[in-house]
View 1 (cartoon, rainbow, N blue to C red):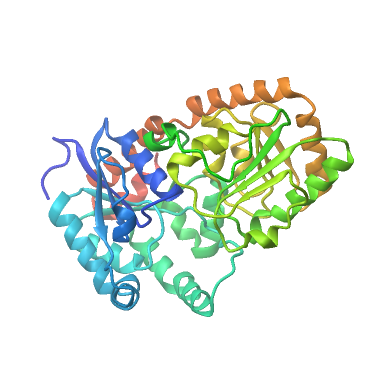
View 2: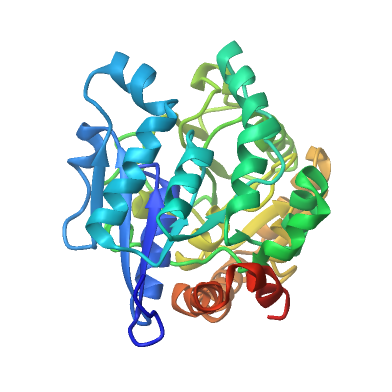
Length: 401
């Protein structure tokens, strides 16, 4: 490989999801890195979804087979397919670094194939602690295989492993061994909006007419660990306290809309994938974003809420307390405590002026602390360190940062 000191680094951000938050993450990180490196996002996905990707944002696509049987049997779980992806990436983009920004099924084969071609691999671990999810039997078996062999194998062979908080470092090393700490570095989750989200003008048809009553928003995947039943219980409690408010629940997941049992007509459930162009309207229809999670590692919803000028009420789980400034950008409550959550929401919903002040503080906070360009600069420092250091010194270089 040619000398990387005399030219900008060539970085490929590999995203195995062609829509939603993981794509936003890769796009935003690539955009932040573009001033200091030659950055490209390579997206792996189904052809129909890839066809809808926005033009002009330096996105490149590798499609799964259109045939579902081939996709499942010959690609998604096939190590040879991921070795072919590595060959394609190296042949087209000649990267110095491939940063895998989220999990892929063939992670170990992909990392090995990239390393064999002299590429330095960085991998972002979003969730060091597995979430409580409803899985099929195959999902449970493959999840065990991931945790028992594939993930530790891949982590041991990456030039660097990225997490979003010190809490994540502790969780990662507790699960996969203390020796991993030497290869791990922390850069927070960025905040801001992609161009398609920021410019979105599509109104979700399920949204109710704008009301003078304050509106809360739960946004993101709807899964058991996110505590939506606690939030719905709060809606009943708030009504008993004389608080007239509305709640929007927006996102797909394993919990059906019928199982959410809205407490009243004041709850709107949009139980489907939310298109990028609809996100702006949903956030602008709300005054406050609520994350009643029972467990979590981190959340991209918080910096997105801040970018829209919305304060956040979140539970004290995972790294969420590191993202919410108590009394300034939002509030923190104990998990699994609907009564405490209702009390906090009551105080905020009774004070519209305070909510507006907190929203403005949140907008300023995300711009100051979670701007993608600044965070990408920290990533670039790691990329440069691992590219310049001899293999036996890479982890020592990371520890000295």
